[in-house]
Length: 461
Image (cartoon, rainbow, N blue to C red; front, side):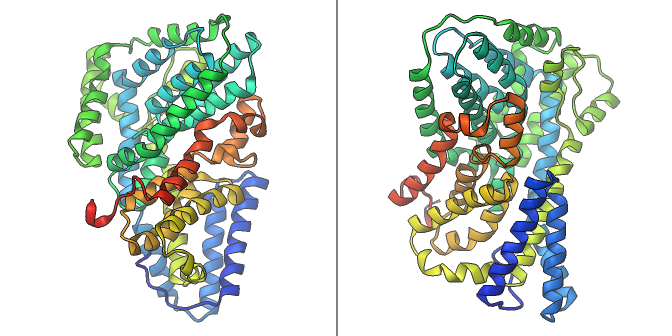
């Protein structure tokens, strides 16, 4: 998007005022009125159009900025459609239910907090949704911790850490796909590159939770047994259900493009679903579009398994296209270029660019409280700075996730922070010191930027 040419050059005061007004419109709408981000972004687009017209910019030029901005998200839109299909097909084949069932079998009396972290990480990876993980198995683990008189704050910290590890590293996650698409990086290349910061953060978090775990007897495991028995009753738990996952890993290692990898894995999963289900083909097509619907009668299981389908991605695709259109307008009107010019002298070193992009992602989370926008706006603003230093796009996409995706649950007024507090009944500030993975990720990404370690340059890629 940094290739969009500005048609005017606003002064710094105008650029700051417009940016502040856009941030205010979006943040007040989301935080104060709990609105979906789509409407305030649309209002902001109209504001920018009015500014452009007042500056005598032809409407056709403004429209061109909208189209050029939205065009940058078309690759992401196709990936999101396939992600929705993959999730529903993996539900039908039993791939995701089998992974979740395996996760629950890891729960033991020893190292309770560490096990909670690992299990929620596995389930987050399986379904690609941090908030669903928190609202289902997270609630179960909180109940167990309460029955054993363990720290609910540490338990919540372990749940949030694991859920957002899974969200960050899962190929099923919309934020992961979004970060890769914004900078034009292959999805699985993006995930592999995130390993440089994510694996150390995971290991350190596991050690911290293991040290904090008391030596207690595991009591009141009724919630866990309820999940396990409910999953078994679905008839979807089979060893062969992991074949679509194994195939996806193999194709990823073979560096097959993400679009083809997701399509092949989905087709395999649909084929497997006919082994243990007598669903008509029309029903399969309906599930792939509308999502898998679980009917076990157990509320927690149904909430965990009812998901996926192309339709489930419309919200995200709409948000992406609107936000990118707004970004196109900001570039077309020269606002982003004006702001970056003021700090251009600070962006001539790799360390400062990495730190600035990380702080921007964190700042958007704090000011607006929306993780999608923290990824989108950071990616739009810093692609040019990374390119000038010869840094590959996957470096920026990693920073966007390390300082964007996983920081959102640490902000009390953010979308994730409010949701988690309402579901678990534990305040954001109470679990924040123990959300080790979410705290370590931005620290490590900035640290590697200053040491110039694990960074990839275009001429070395």
